[in-house]
Image (cartoon, rainbow, N blue to C red):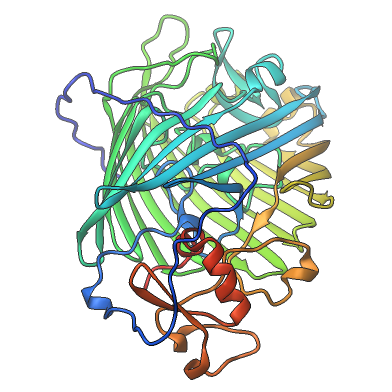
Length: 511
């Protein structure tokens, strides 16, 4: 049973520092600061400070994904700063059938720049994320049958997905050791994401090849663009507890400005990573004045609960990523539910198959219809899938050509509105994203045609998972910043020394 958050009067106003660092791929290698090998041993685990969170674990906002996650990014080093750039661009033609269907040519896109460095005894991360969709997606959004949420031209958007805002994220984050394996973290900015829901769909590996937003988007990750947020949390090697104060109001129709507001919404989230392949979260939030009312009606509060599980299975040839979730929204005393399951399978960073199944309860208000009582939940089902063929890697990027198809099912009372109980959709697209970087030893990587400087390493050579297996007593080693690291091969050791910070950022935390 879900109980509402009891909100005390929140202090109005907050001071933000708006940070932006747009990381641009650059040529050249980071200077190596690693020193010799031989004879030294790593410090006992109990004597070490809390390890930094692996870079691969970082999702959208402060959300986590499994440690076994490929990174689709370009990377460089400028002095003490690690710079990364992420992007995903689609140019698509979409067709949805039925009375509410439409055709549209446009571009779904986003780009993020990130800069990270050590500061004092911790680490600071600056992010800027942007989208050109205010200009590349026409009208009130792109066709996406059974989608709903936000407003356009004074009416609720339905059967379309609204374009992203120009400013998707401008944020700063700092984390530092607290005690032994415990660290603390603070995050915030004028545009960001509160601690609510799973990793947002544009960042989920299970959704990455798929150009379309889920129709359950507003049950799971509708707050992934929030204009005003502060999050604080503590985390260990395999868990994190965090809470946010934020502006829970939906962005306005003008997609190129900052829709700042009072930080009078609240959320909390718990993460558990039982293994390197699994990330689990449960979260809840109270969003004040989140939804616009009809006409002159007052804005409506929304209470949200989400539960999700993400599974990644990654090696040097394949990436299989899946996410399952359940969400509940309650507004004006009415509760609706959504179930989501999505998966993607990528072979050799070249062939990608994706699929999604959603069952969502939406009200007549959500869909802009009057054929059913507004208090009744109308159960909708949508099945979608597709394929993308990525071309050869060029300058660290991969272009691809793909297609998707879907079928949406509505109940009998909506048959006259949609033209049929089952309506099909289809789309074709070209896409560009960075090539995958996967933490692995060099076995097989040459055949896959990838450049991999992120290698497997461990403090204890017996914990290396090498193929073929090696004798831990003869494992190559190197000392970096006073600690001894062991490797599967001399080549892995040499690659580690070219960019030790990147390799260590991918290293899972100690059990």
